[in-house]
Length: 273
Image (cartoon, rainbow, N blue to C red):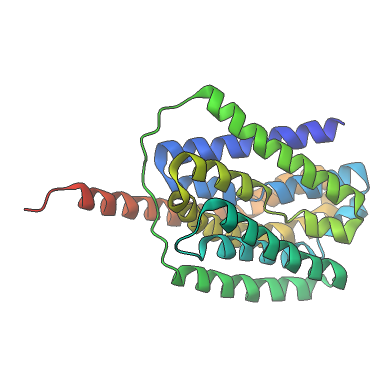
């Protein structure tokens, strides 16, 4: 029960922070936070806590490949230029689920091959996503509301709890698939779409994609070897330290996108001379 409360708290914190930052600064910086290892990191930690260190290490075998499929979820969500939120999200989740089922059925347990395929697949998805040319959304000037932040975070916490529960009952390899579920992304896209519109939520996928590709797969590699070397708790801490250079690079990239979005928006608002 304690680990589920912790899972809820971590999900609540990330979604509340992502959506509040989106209100204040726009999609780039919000997507940076949401793109960092969160649900997957929590799930792998809890697998090691509730089952065993060996089970958590085994779950990492399929995690990179599973997360590359989760990047495809962002592509499926953002690709349609004109579509309402509900059918857009339903199609994206359905396609993600079908691809994840294929990964689960294959019971893929070769970590090195998983990383190689994940890098190739994630790079391809990134290129396809960039070709859509989704413009980043700037600051939207929404008034801060503590109650709204609490309710938004609660949605994320519930979704993360569900993912962690499924990952625990499915065995290590299946857990690696569920650990890569887009829990934070789904709830963040829902909240920002409801608050600012579908096009704003589409722009959030830009920084989710950049930050996720630069940090999540390296995190999985770090965890794989650190768990066996120093245990799950120190392994989790040191894994975040290990990916900090990649996280810094992602931060620089999304800050630049926020500045470009602000400049573009300001230019549109200025009267023609």
